[in-house]
Image (cartoon, rainbow, N blue to C red; front, top):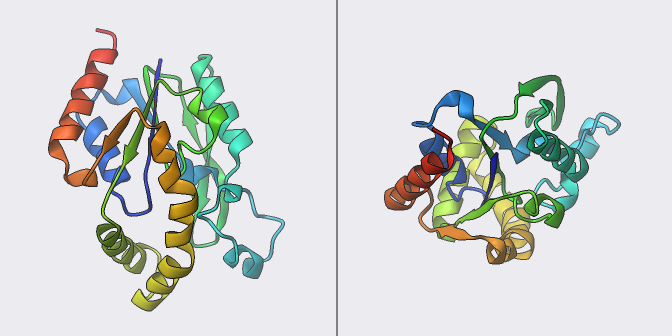
Length: 203
């Protein structure tokens, strides 16, 4: 088994990078584990309290469950991956059954933040992008997919995303074995990664 961690700031294009890497790989030999699925269970909180959660802080994630499940996959055991809804800011009752396979990709803004999780990875990647480009992508995504106004996105970027990125996400770049600049637009880097992963998969 080969475990890859892919981190990068919100709007850096890491999801695009992951999709382009795996779209030509055999579907039964690679599994994607989105870190967003491992936000803490907030069932015990009121809707108002959930809205006040800083989802760009390390404390928002259930690191124990994520690390345990990646370890289980590494040991050849299947897992029930949680699912998360941004609309209600909480986990959903449904889970996703994941079988162990040859390549596991963990993708998320802080995929490289926790040492216990990094220690389970064979390759660590940081997807980098210009701050202006990240902001544009966040505006496009949040206004279309998450029902936010442009002003709401700008306020959140200034008050939360930018300071959290500088404090917690950008520093994890030092742990990366490979940095991919220009996000999903870097076709050469993506092709190199895809070819590298193919060679790691057994014939």
